[in-house]
Image (cartoon, rainbow, N blue to C red; front, side, top):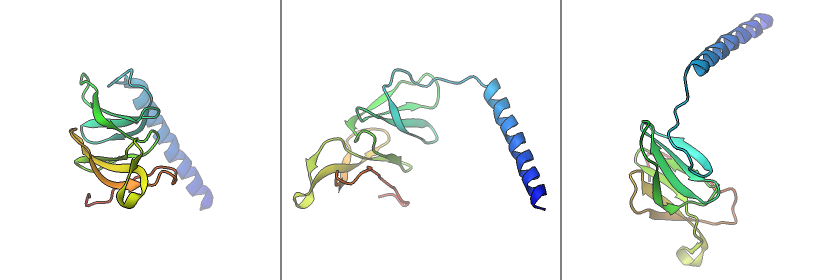
Amino acid sequence: MKTFLNRHTMACWAVLLELIWSIASTAAPTILASGVGSPDNIIVDNSTVYWGDAFTGQISSVSKNPGGGVTNYSINMDPGGDLVQDNASLYFIGAAWEPGANGVEGHPIYKMSKTGGLAARIGNHNAWLRPSRVVVRTPSL
């Protein structure tokens, strides 16, 4: 029985790999944006691709429909930190070092609408704790 499962599993993987190769070899890639620095922490929703630059922390987005322009958001994230989302907002650790509540310094944690605008400070991250991680649970904050 063990031999049958292994052969069966290998056959399924072979078919799956052939299907992926077939799709990948016939579909031409679509370039949505170029010249955007060093995209990192790329996330996608139904209509848009979002990313933070690995070196500058610049948060940007582009429509998944070809031909749209790149949108740069008004505030930078901690380079290399997490960029996460819920249905309406982006969450990230800010690049600027600021005093926080009760005199605790660190990088502020922000919530910002996916459509842009001002980011709201929702917390503080102690920069001595690495890596910089943000997690969003539903329902959203």
